[in-house]
Image (cartoon, rainbow, N blue to C red; front, side, top):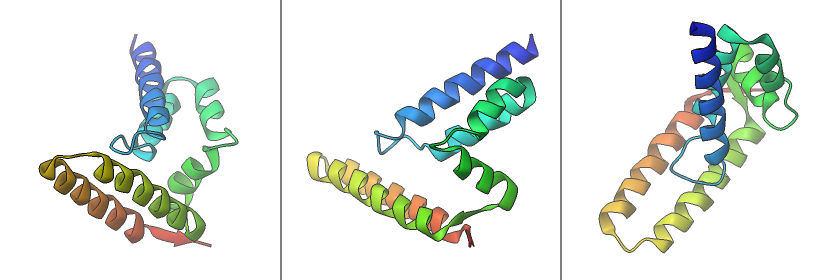
Length: 119
């Protein structure tokens, strides 16, 4: 029963992470890391699928095994974060939302930049 719940949570977090690729306020990486955690505890098949995925498997492995992010990934993350949140700020007409998005940008950027830079 516990195994099935962990698989379900892994799938849910994988879906949320994938949606987060296109929605700036929904984080991708934390959801993928949670998905890897739940799959690691419940299903070797799904865990291997996630870790060997050609699109995002390397990022998850780097984070888990080496505890860091490459400089290229840091730069790409900050660029896409800037574009996504910048576009959202441009499209919104709500000052409170603009401030909220700005705070999210600052917090996420700080988190990314403080991660260990891998060679």
